[in-house]
Length: 91
Image (cartoon, rainbow, N blue to C red; front, side, top):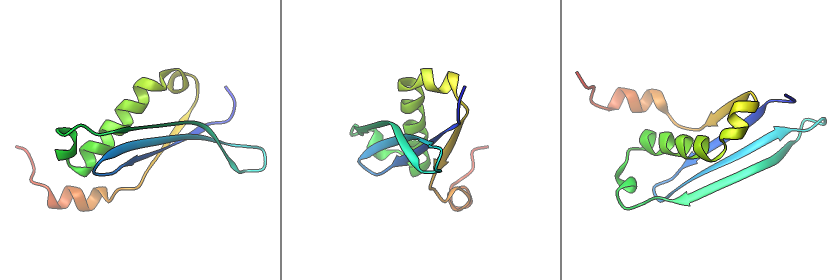
């Protein structure tokens, strides 16, 4: 199965992107795959966490063969705790 992969997931207000990388023997990241797409008008209304989840779903569908074969560590920069504390809770 080889070395594990790292999936960097990004979501802006207009697009989603992901970068699949693997560390080489020297410890430097080597790009395996890059994906991106522009958000639709409806998707642009999503919250930051929803856009990030969309990016992860989009990537999982496109790179399913990698997801099933390798151990993958997901890396996303989002202030999740801040988001959870400022968002209304569903009851």
